Length: 89
Image 1: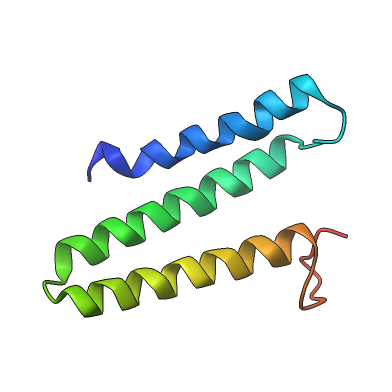
Image 2: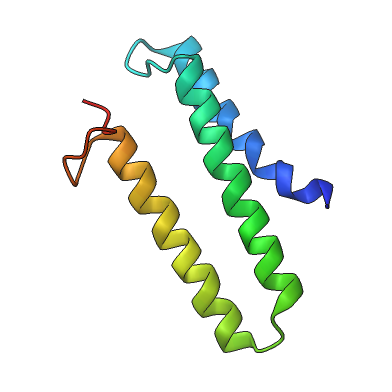
């Protein structure tokens, strides 16, 4: 497993710094853990697709599907677009 799948975790510095600057960003430890888990899964999935597919069009399609799934899960966890029991409200 490559170390580069953990590089997207540096994106978690954005809400951490935002919490220090303003009161409008209010994340707790579980938010950071969940987003870190989602970012790690996304980057591992993208790394898997890049290593296992040779066709450029299929690679773009699979990465697009992974990004769409990531964004839907993120939106559901943050604001609850599907009104499931796991939403953020």
